[in-house]
Image (tube, rainbow, N blue to C red; front, side, top):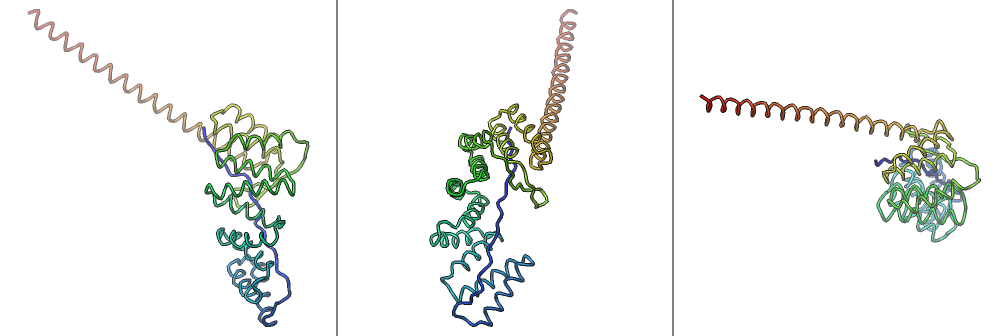
Length: 272
């Protein structure tokens, strides 16, 4: 049985720009800065990008502006543009871990093989240089998406064996998020692995443990609902197959009766 529910969501946050105007007009800079801040306030990322680009024209070497634009591009779903600018910023400041996490999340969202490989590598770098169980969970999730179940399981075992206590953001169906215990997320990811390996009993155990730790964990509840739907579909399919088999048996019985009747009639003709 194969099932997958996306569990974790990275915060695609963005940095605000400094107030220094570079070499351009102070009034034009102030106008664009005010437009940028207003656009951010109302989540108008398209206008914010325009304002930032005008600000960047005044100082094309300003990495803070470039950083902000990169984050806005990724926040608005323009992953390729954001990742290109983000790579430029990372060359200037390899320890810009906040931006690196956003880039890893964008690469995970892109979902192609090359992007997922980069996302895994960046989450690994964040875990090694910054630390934090969430980066192990993110590595595991990317591993599952790639089908690298052994790699994902090795990361999850570290989490489950750890004494660390903490929470991580998990995406909700309504677009919001909730804070969920690390181990509840790890058990749910383990359930995903087991179901993909057709080890359904083990998968159910991990799913039950996830909900025992975090009873309101929406992603786990959704997986339960999905499993119930699969079971209902299998039961309906089984009933349909049983009905078809019954019809086939009945048809075969009718054919046999017809053949026996014909033989009997032929026997009567021959006996006269």
